[in-house]
Image (cartoon, rainbow, N blue to C red; front, side, top):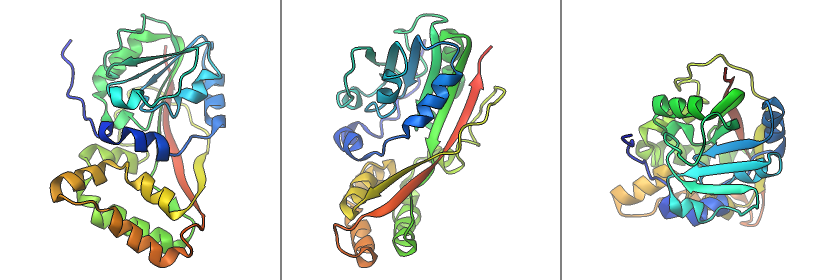
Length: 253
């Protein structure tokens, strides 16, 4: 099988990715597990540093979590019922045919070769298995002035440096090819209380920031820090930051 090129946007920031990326609501995975025909095996594909894997580990007998980035996997949490594998989503030989009850891709499917990924999903899924593509949409701050500063950085400073596939996140995955009958997902969002440095650290994990650094030869984060500092208040002050969640969910035949 010919492998598609691996779009490695995050290996160089794997430690920061694990440290700064926000966590998902545990109830999201409760909902998805309740849809699965059984709770024997879940596959977290494109698992990165295991942000979603940790939730699946408490709900399924076994979890297989795969990612093509060994650097990302090196930061993932360890659990006795989780097996990690360095593999692309389009080809996961660690999984047997018709063995998986729940397949998820959290903030990852927009990087996949989707036709080949869907072929692998059909191979590994048990009858009635659930496939869930999860994305969180662009960051929002409840404070209007701070949010304007963040959105200016997102769209103007690093906007030209987002990879083309990022558009799927902007649309909540509605622009992704998804050739299956769909089930609605739960109305949820990720929400945190962060100080300025936590938010800047998170922005440092963006693929557009990495690309800006490579093309411009300098770090754009001081621009973000300066723009936020002018409206933030004391540096240690915390603000409510959130990401609306969107899904494409199906039950496979």
